[in-house]
Amino acid sequence: MISHSESLDVGGNKVEYILNDGSGANKPDFEVEIINADDSEEINEKIAKKLSDEVWSLNPKFKKEDLVEHFGIKLDSRVVDVYNFAEPLSEVERGSIIRTISRLYEMLPDKSLWRLESIQITHEKELNLKGGSFIRGREYVKQNRFEIYPQGRADNKYREGELLCSELQGVVTHEVTHVVFEELLEKNWNSPELGWVRTNDFRVELPGGMRSGSYNRLWKECPTSYASLTEADDRAESMVAYLFAPESLHEKRKSILDKILLKHSEEKVYPIVELPLEIPKFGRPLNINIVPSKIPGLFGTVTLKKSETPSPVITLEDLRKKLLA
Image (cartoon, rainbow, N blue to C red; front, side, top):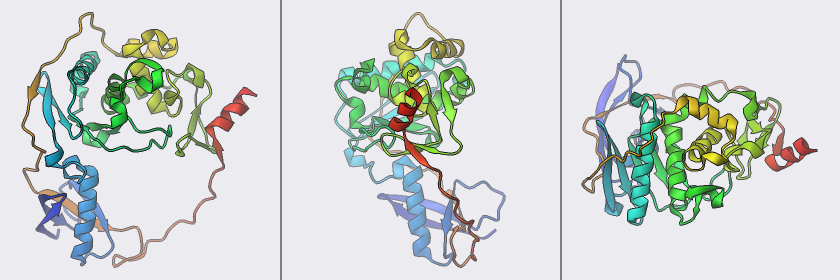
């Protein structure tokens, strides 16, 4: 195995790493595709891009000078760090986050499955390519975290009033479901009665422009309009309804969640701890493997498959019109 140590500035942070050629037995922290193994500028550029994409604390959009709040929610031996890079949270907002996280943790039947480590609150706005409106939150499952966007803090009821909880209560529940509960729920979400149909010979264009390989033939039974766009969002929105508007949740979905989740008559609120306004830093060098890029380069030419004929596309609106016809 060929390896050597380097350091690199990523988003104002000095990162030490050990660069390997991939021939060793040790599992790397990251793999980076490069074209020219002798081009140190390309290697550094690709590593910086990879790290800023996959390590939130190295992403340039999260600057220490913008951090206005940092507190932890203590869930037994675990702590969920909340980093706020936007407007300071009101007492109501902070309470909503703490109580919602506490309630979801209490409902998890096996606490060892809790994997949420941190939440980042950002001031940036971004369009949702599924629904077409501004993003409320976004999960990063591999990083055990999620982000809350300005729309997730809007002072109105969730999803323009489709469910009678606050936007913040809804987005926290939705994103925690993606990060913590998804695997548990997915294996129980396979009944044809839920309406999900996989498409093999066409793609469905969602309102925001994203294309999907499935649709729901019983979309009116989904807890919200957003829930009807993808199966994972159906599960996440069903959790929101289950917590805050159980009477609105279709019995098929409610019965699944009843069987999986723990119920508690008293609401337990876990304590918090105020933490320094610091962004996490790496305490050790990262192991990074460099691997050949899948385009022609000094590693040789990769034979590419002939592009397949693209599948026909139908908008979700037109598909639903056909289903109703």
